[in-house]
Image (cartoon, rainbow, N blue to C red; front, side):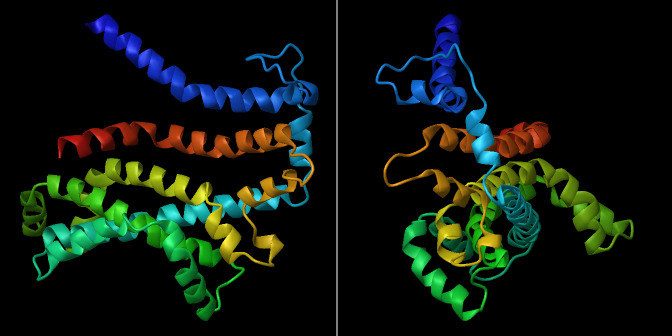
Length: 270
């Protein structure tokens, strides 16, 4: 039985990793091999020309920094707000608390496309079009419901007695919040931060909708449009750009992987 499960796990891992392998392979293949009708899962003449074409795009570095800034700000703001909201929903008793939780869950079911046009008019009325702030605001709003719902379980897992003991020792509510609860909920924050980072980093729809004419504020997914041409797409450059876009997500995941594993384990336990 153990051998069957191990074989199944390896098969699932291969299925998951294969698209990534093919993306990297297409990024290093010569143009002739990419356009060939007889595709092979290897190449004997790897080339970095596709990466050179991507890095030669005007303001590519600026697009990269814009995406990184938006993603990090969304992670920070959504993490703090979700933590405070989860504490309020768990530690305090008030009317309609269950209704609020249900609304957070319902918010996750609404398709992003259905809210894009209303959000566009809202951002326009706020005068925030063509700014990175509009992307930060919208992504924070979309990641908060999931983050609050998940962190609520971690906060609820912390015994109330710890709060009461700290307050008896003279600790203020602020001290209890940041010195006791925050470190214990850190695994959950790591798990939600990965979701928030990926959501903001890979976004194309909102970046295309809210950044209309300010090319200096465009994000990295917009740079891929350069390689989509009416006559023939530059698939080598598209795959190379996609590979470069994957690296920051991988680095961020490696930085929080220990907390992430603990966080997912705590979520299952809860």
